Amino acid sequence: MSEVEKFLTEEQERQIVKTIRVAEKNTSGEIRVHIEKTTSKPTIERAKEVFYYLKMDETKDKNGVLFYLAVHDKKFAIIGDVRINTKVPNDFWLSITNTVLKEFKNNNFALGLEKGILETGEKLKEHFPYQNDDINELTDEISY
Image (cartoon, rainbow, N blue to C red; front, top):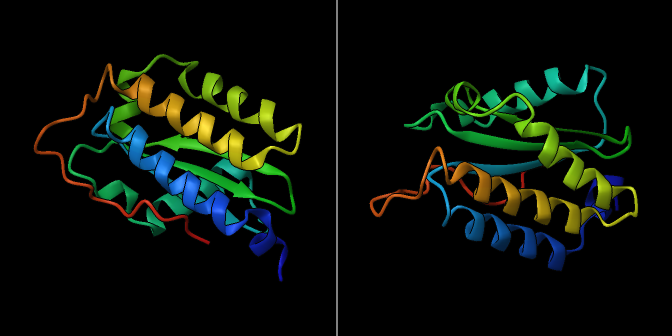
């Protein structure tokens, strides 16, 4: 088993997917998690590449959010699409990142992601509330 495959158990993966679905009941925002072994690029640049590769920029409301991890490098970033970034305060992502990293420091990776995802859904509710006709535009599954 590779480092990436061992990063989360199957049960933890299922729980994270379930957490994404719970968070998306608060917001029309679309949340994804991407995990890979390593990156030679600056973390935020690689996260942006993955964001576009996963077509997260193609949501109707431009409100996708990516949680990106390079496990071997111990790199983590959260990025949001352009419409989110024009509406939220400058420290918006920093607060969520701190929530996640607090758990990561104690090797609670799944819990850190879950807490960050729930906080994202809660905070996005103000700017991108859930709509009754909301369609889940992106898969909730973790990508590798």
